[in-house]
Image (cartoon, rainbow, N blue to C red; front, top):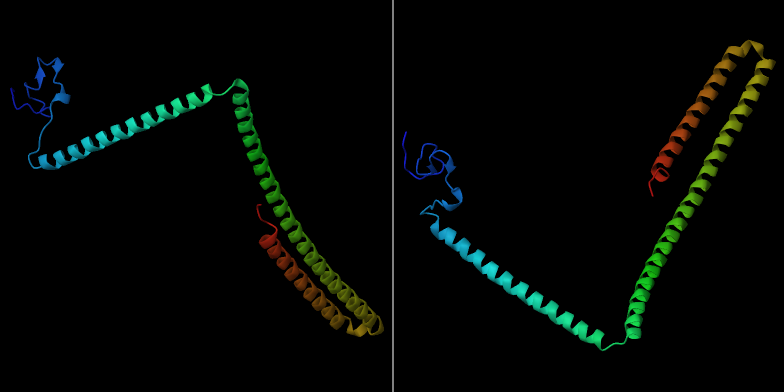
Length: 197
C-alpha cells in the first residue's frame, strides 16, 4: 500500500521513510494546529522574553562577580603577607567564637533539661513514698484485723465459719484496694515516666 500523506504516525506512508531502511527524521516534522497557533505564539514569546531576562540577570551576576573579584584582588595586592595572615587568623577566631557560643548554648540547654528531669524525679519519688506508706498502712490494718479474728475464733470455736467468712471478706477487700493502687501506679507511670526525652 502506497501512501504519501507525510504523517509520521502513518505506518504505510512512503514519504515518511526511505526504502524501508532509513527512517524519517521525526525531529524535523512539526505538525501545526491552526487553532493553537496564537496560543503557541504567546508561549513562545513568553519563553523568549524569560530567556532574554535570564541572560541579562546572568550577565549582571557574572559582572558583579568579576567586580567583586577585582576589588578583592586589589585589596589583597595592597596587603602585606602578615596582614593576610592576620585576616585569616581573625576569620579562624570568628569561627572558634561561633563554635564556642554554640557549645555554650547546648550546655545550657542540657543543664535546663537535666534540672527539669531531676525536679520531676523528686516529685515522682515523693509521690511513690506516699503510695508506699498508704500500702503499708493498709497491710498493717489487715494484719491487725486478722489477729482479732484469730483471737475471736479461739474464744468462740463454734463461730469459726462466720469468722472465716469475715476474714476472707477482709482479705478480698485488701486485695481489691491493692490492685486498684497498683493500677493507679501503672497509669501514673505511663503518664509521667514512660516518655522519650
